[in-house]
Image (tube, rainbow, N blue to C red; front, top):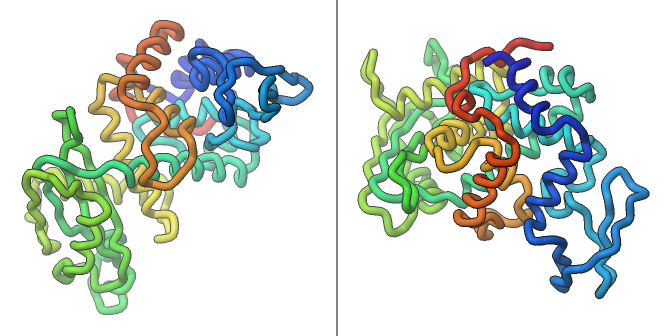
Length: 324
């Protein structure tokens, strides 16, 4: 599906800024306004701003639709934010800041900041999500050099590709995590790297854990984890033309997120990503604001209201690189 087709799909449901505001209101307060401080259900609405301001009629606390979300205090129109989420979640390749700046008519700095905030929400969700069941992991090499001289090997970085399952789900959940300590990436996976990965990303009550601690890939192998890492590293190199280690992890999280959510047909990609961005911002160990039951109900209501043909959105063609 071409980029223009995605935009047409989006415009069918969100033609105006007011429609976006109403949509976010229904998501944040599906049963009507609720004060975040005292839980009172009545408020005065102040409409002299770009976005309405709600003042609790009991405790006088003021809040907005975007408070405690990734959109908080942003001067960018909410409709542009929703389009970003739509493209990040639903397209095969995602979108980069140069494309986005041209598409929604903002500066490159603003476009990059918007994408960075969305990736941060994805990364926080991934940090909360622990691999369970039968977990498999393997050492891989990020920024692999063609000629592994001593100088070249110092540019490489160890990464761990892993798969497992989540509670009440049968499909695999994938992660690719860069090692937090520096070393020769092609050496055997160190015990400290292994322990750090298990502590941060593996559920303590898993069924079984298998780790391949050596970077050895059989030529023409179709094994899942090596292919996952290879495709992710190639996407980062070809689409973004190389990334520094400072930001590489968030791009890997985005890649794995898009793959993971494509297997979950109980929820549309946009609905899931929007739930992450509307969640209360907190530490990675905080419980997500949207429970599975609430997310499922909102997902159903959203599809019924918006009437988007989602059957074409789960496996879109790779045509996102067209720049408008």
